[in-house]
Every structure is written in C-alpha cells, then in structure tokens.
Image (cartoon, rainbow, N blue to C red; front, side):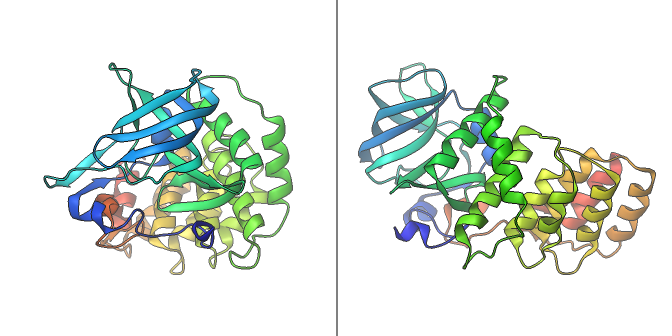
Length: 316
C-alpha cells in the first residue's frame, strides 16, 4: 500500500534504469485517452523488460470489447528525446488489477502510451489514478475511478456517456471546502477527480463553486485543477479571478500556465491590457512540471510564463 502514501507524487517512477536508458516528453492524460482504442481492467501475468507485458482482460470498460489474453509490445505516444542502446523498457510489475488505455497494432499486439503513462494500478480497491499528467497521481476509489474515466474516454471518442453519477460527485465534492492533503486525503482526491472531470467533459458548471479551489494558494493541486475546470464555462468573474492568480507572486508557474490555457476561452476587451501589464514582470525561465534529473520524463518541457503570455497576446 505504500504507493498510496503520497498524494500526487512528483517522483521517479519505475527507478533510475529508465532515465539511464531513454528520456521522453510525457503526454498529458487527455492525449493518452484520445489516442487509445480501448479502456480495460486487466490482470498482469508476465512482464519482460524488452518484449512487453502479458495480461488477461478482466473487464472492458470503453472502446471495443476485449477478452482473454493480450500482449502489450509497444508504445503509441512515446516521444523520445534521448536514447541509448537499451531503449524504452517495460517496468510494470505483475499485479492482479491494472487499468490500461490500449491501442491495437496491425500484428494483433497492443500498445500502451509510454512506459510511465496509460495505465493505473489498483490495490485493495484503490487506484493510483492519473487525470492530468503521470507526474500527478491520486489514490481514487475504484467506484469513483471507473465511471469517471469511462465517461472521459467516451466523451473524447464522441460516444454518449452517463452524467448522473458525475453530476452528483461534482455537487457533493465541491460543496466542501478545499481539503488538506495530509488530513483529508479521500476528500482531497475526490475534489481533484471532480475538477478534472469538469475539464475533460467540458461541463458548464457555475463559476462560484470552483473559486475556493482556485484561490487556495496553499493547495497547488486544487489550484491547478480549478484553473483547468474554468475553461469549460468562461464568465467575467472567472476571468477576473484567473487573472488574479496569474499576477500573484504566490502561485506556482505550473498553475499559471494552466491559467493561461483557461484564458484561451476568454476574449474580453480588458484581457489584452491586463496580460500586457503582467508580461512586463513575468518570469523568463522554462516552467517545470516536476520530477528530477534522473526521471525518464525529464524531457517534458513547458514554456516560460513570459513566452506563454506573449503567445496568448498574439491571439488577441
């Protein structure tokens, strides 16, 4: 259960061997899901670092229906930056329950997104879930993970999905004040899922319930998810609050990049002038998403706040 002792672990996943072999630009979760053909729960029965993963399908959740044994032999969204003779390897351990986003190959094998993305291990009914990026994982109950992630898959693939459960989750979770990561882990994770699901499904929820999360400068992950959620239903109040975060010296650069992405949905007359003012003192250093120099995902690059604001201004 030690995998669930940390919320949103910014860590070296799967050890330093990956970093020594290959580095890559890790995709965001929406890209992982959009490019997948299937979303399944499977039992991992064998792993070969070079040849791949053998798994038995337990349940098909979205996409086509898969049954029986399958072989995961490649990666469908791996953008390599540096490579040695070893190349990317499979490091997932044998486990009874693991969710996969899979893409079928012409030779009837399957591909996962990268060695570190496109799967979620479940132990004792709790899923090490990714809703934003593999650097940011949360321990989510199976009963929450399956309906939300299935709906997200279906939405990105143009299929109908059930909103009854999701609307209830959003209403009940966001009615509570922003949870503390150490003392209210379950609520913290559910609020993260609710906010990220609003983003993925583009749900036009009211602005007011999202603002306590956006304003909570002590809670990096709540701020990040709230910024993403506010792209779904742009309002003057939301724009005002997003700009406050962008100008704040207390907000992390990563959060500010997500704020800028949210502001792509806004076109007010005041926006250009506000951005031009903020640009004058914006940091010019590239933004980091997490990890360290021995992480294989170290090639995941993000622009500086200055460059991101300048790019947004060109669109206005």
